[in-house]
Structure formats: structure tokens, C-alpha cells
Amino acid sequence: ATSASPGTRMANTPNWDIASSCTIENRKGLILVEAKSHEAELSCDGKKTGNSHNHEQIGNSIEKANESLEKVISGWALQRDHSYQLANRFAWAWKLAEMGVPVVLVYLGFLNAEEMNGVRFGTHTDWERCIHKHADPFVPSNAWGQRLDIEGTPLFPLIRSLELDIHP
Image 1: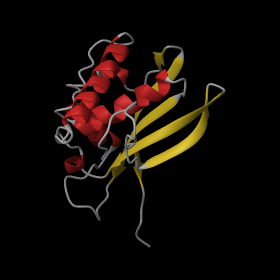
Image 2 (image 1 turned 90 degrees about the vertical axis):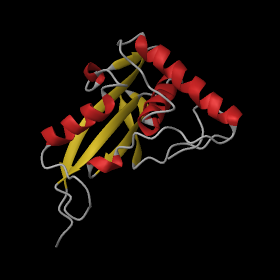
Image 3 (image 1 turned 120 degrees about the vertical axis):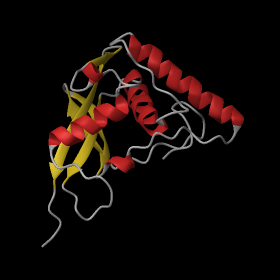
Image 4 (image 1 turned 180 degrees about the vertical axis):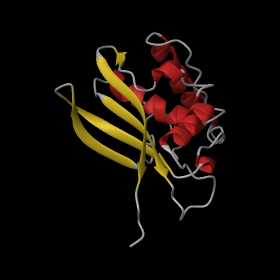
């Protein structure tokens, strides 16, 4: 979770499950991964109110991301007050791309994670359905798996899954 928006002075950045540098289209870029092992990890909560000025700036930043992304593919409705984690991840990825940093934003589902409580994902299709159910009101379903051109810089939102056996 994070408590500040992109571009805010002294802002906290999101706590990514995985963040890595990489090369995207012959440019230095970032892979940012949000990983989940069960459906309950996809929060519908909005941003908790704190500093009212900061809260307003977060809303403004998310709205800027919506406006820019809308120029690429219509149907964006990221919100500060609903599914904030999703909005925050896309807003940060967009902001980096706007700054000229190519980004691959991966929503990674761990399949058959029996050690975790909650509704587990048995197949990639289960994970993909879950993401679409959670994200489609805010992220156009046709944005996933596409190259989104943010002022000449690519942003790739991807849905991926992995089965990782951690038992000996």
C-alpha cells in the first residue's frame, strides 16, 4: 500500500511485490509486478482519508492518469475511492511512462497456492477471470496485453500466472 500519489513531494511509492529493471524496445525500463495468491487479496477499498491536501492530490493524479490513458484506449475509470490499489498501480505505471520510462505492469496470479487461505486460482483462466471481474469497471478489458503508447513511451499491462511448488 502507499499513502501518496505520483508527483507528490515526499510521496511514498507503492510497495511492489517485484520491481526489476529491464530493456523494453531498446530502452531502459521497469517491470512492476503486483502478485496475488487468492481472490481476497484484490482489495476494493478506497484510499483512506488522511491529510486532506494529500488526499486531494492523489485524486487529481489518478484523474490525470485516466485522462491520458483515455486518449490511448477509451473506458478508463480509475478511482481513488474504490479499488485504490489497482488505481494506484496503474497511475504509477502511467506516470513513469509519461516521464519516458517504459513499463511492463504485470498482475501475477500464483496458481494452486495451497498454503494460502482464501479462494485460490486453479488455472490461468481462473486468475484472468478474477482480474477482469475486479478490474473491468476501471480498466478497459482490451487494455490488457496491449502496448499502450504514452506520449511515445510504452506501457504494457499484462495478466500472467505461475504455479510455484514450494513444498519439498
